[in-house]
Image (cartoon, rainbow, N blue to C red):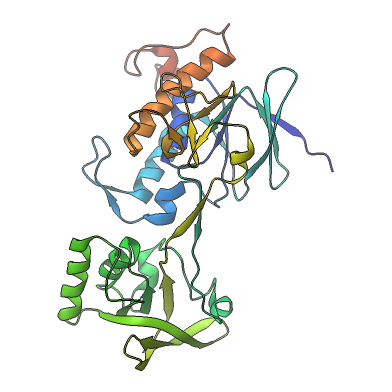
Length: 345
């Protein structure tokens, strides 16, 4: 089956905050964007890892959750009508005779554009799964590898497995709304931040949550719904823990995916770019956000926003040298305001 080729101005791979802001910056210049992401919704790491956790270093926002930030960026990009291709991964890349790039996804979607922007953050996040024999019996029903909505766990009995920052943070945050939270860690030392570990132990000391040092050795329940876990402690004691949901936070494996085979200069899974344009070693392909590296790089969301602005202008000049680029400020430029839908009618 031959798939129709979709033509656009810019293909953005990754729909995290930086990819979404790139839609806005490109839209100000009159560029149409199509976005590709292997997740089933926009938002990237913000949505997958901390949708309800506060972020404190977004300019003008003293505090904002990952979910709120993504919602705002989607609203900001909406005047430019971006097209999302979700639950699929950018796979094949081919240079066309006219100098454009053609991307084919794992679902067979074919998109062609003169500009490609790699904004995949650290790559595709894949949770490390614990080696529990019965784990597949309960996955997708009562085993969750990420917290998307805290309210889901209200009045539920939770067992959190792990000793890193995610495990400690969620044990603390979920304890006030869950019926009971039990943290299980394979040793008595935590990998998470010392202050967070002390806060967790203080809550355990007050009886607000339970901490067990040991390993899950059996899982019980019917039709995919957990009812109880067996935990063997470091002392060899076997304890039965009532459980509605198990949340294993054993860390994440990060994979750059097929992009690693695209002939870009890589430095430990990061794409090397020119900091004055954010172009890669392949003409017409740019990289912004956590995936790119250059001297003095600071890994912050706000840094990625800056990179998106510089990249959009550089890419415009490369791809459309005969077009006049709208300049100036959004507060005064009538062309930009018209594109935003806020100009004088």
